[in-house]
Image 1 (cartoon, one colour):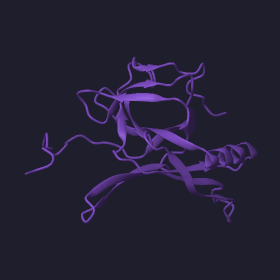
Image 2: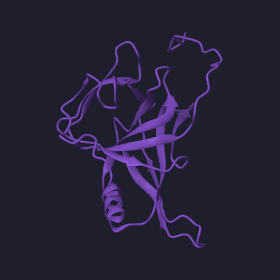
Image 3: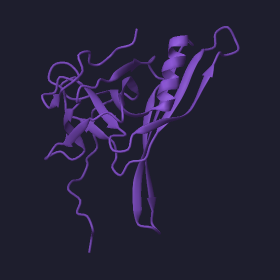
Length: 194
């Protein structure tokens, strides 16, 4: 007897998509954020109560950021879990970034990623990572490069462990974060970089 019944098949998708990320948004994990999944679309978050907290927007150059959610299973133990990993590159070293990266390394975060992939209506896809257990900044470098044309800046890797794969956010109405189920945001939401 099967433990789980499948619910659908999947045909070859004829549409083209783009990989990579446009932006990521950090939310401090220990803030009192609550969320609910959509009743008819499993793994889609349709409501978030931010409880007065904010998210912090980071924009990276094109082609330097990625998300991977690895499925980790054990046949012997009968277990499965997911390890989300977010890799980002930020160009240019600065004292302000040094301090923020130090704070990120001390904090557990949730990460919301705005993908280059778009829905049929032209809106970007957003995914949510670390919703249950958070992600930690566990690896990275701060480097100057060697040659005149080398990049200097930061390479950061966040990872975590979750019982469920990452969720997608319900599509926004007009602009990102205006979903009717997203309530009690801080006055400035999101907080964008300077």
